[in-house]
Length: 210
Image 1 (tube, helix red, strand yellow):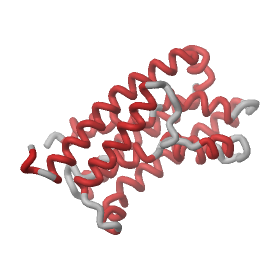
Image 2 (spheres, helix red, strand yellow; image 1 turned 90 degrees about the vertical axis):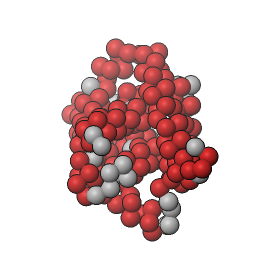
Image 3 (cartoon, helix red, strand yellow; image 1 turned 135 degrees about the horizontal axis):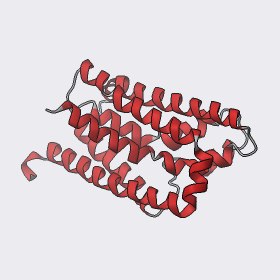
Image 4 (cartoon, one colour; image 1 turned 180 degrees about the vertical axis):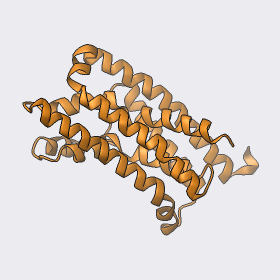
């Protein structure tokens, strides 16, 4: 198994799922009226929160599955369906309730810790990203591979930090149409990943059918 090739694929998948560009409008709206220094601090909080959530999923996700007696093939199918639902919303350039509910969006304007909830959780590091990380840990079981998975987690955290740090400029340059185009492209990549997860899960659950 080529670990570095797998890590690259996981990094691309996480970028598509987390979709930092798609989170720019929410970041701008929830930090409206803030100074650049306050926005910069919030961008760091978002990045650190995303890293922590995905790192915990990487290191403890398997233990949680074992606790609830969930098999990996079942999780692959369930996670693939979840990702496909998210991908369909992204292809339509819509906000998915999987990422953020209306109640959470409303709460964002009433809380100071918007960097953690709802921007980092669940808008960016939501169920889709968490499922992807947990599934990835089973490509090459072992602590060493789990530690290697912290590389794509760190990369996505840096991408999130960089994107949110220049969110105002990104929003001005791309506009609504540009952000929607990027979101649809990420959704297409995510849809392909979702199909791959489901196929792998079904092939392991029903090997005689494949």
